[in-house]
Length: 272
Image (cartoon, rainbow, N blue to C red):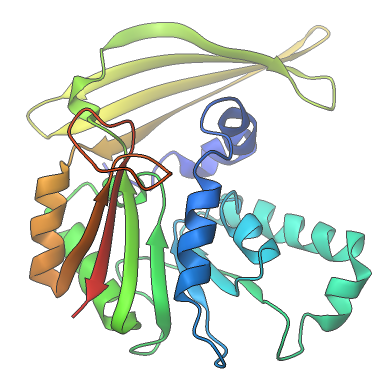
């Protein structure tokens, strides 16, 4: 089992589901953090790990942040690239100035976050929103990724990441209808979801079945998303081993303090 499995299949439904669950409630937090990290008087980019379809990437770019998104899923990135083209068509002024020194840039790269394809010290900030590091199911994969981040972030730079809160406590259930809705093209969508806890391997598994219906035509897509059940304390030790010091542990998107009952598990670290 690999943590990247399932994400290509998830791509057609990712934005539809997140608009109804997580939505944009974490986006202002990442905007503020990224804007603070931009170096005054020097063109620099923020790196987003596991950018997917650009749910976080585009709002940061629109807020004036130059950003590079990297993801392994070609299907996810295809949607991000299509969105970028659409954004440029809708805003001719932005398209004309996108190559100027003053204009924020947005780039998408297909790559493996365990082996980041960038020179040392390329970024003042790297972000890993909402659980992307927990898709690294083996300890060596997480260690390789943290080492890669430590290499590409500048000394004194920032690494911001979020963990899915308290995954081991998620109640197991089988074939529950979690979401229903209709897309703009008139297709009705239903998500049938199961949650399994693999305590031996310390994994939480989300079995997804999306059912699309338009008239008499029905299509089903099934896949599993796997997440490693890491705690804040465990991640803190791994960050410190990789050469970071912890700047803040936050429990919400307004900057409130973290505890184990918090809705959000956010770690802000500084490259030593």
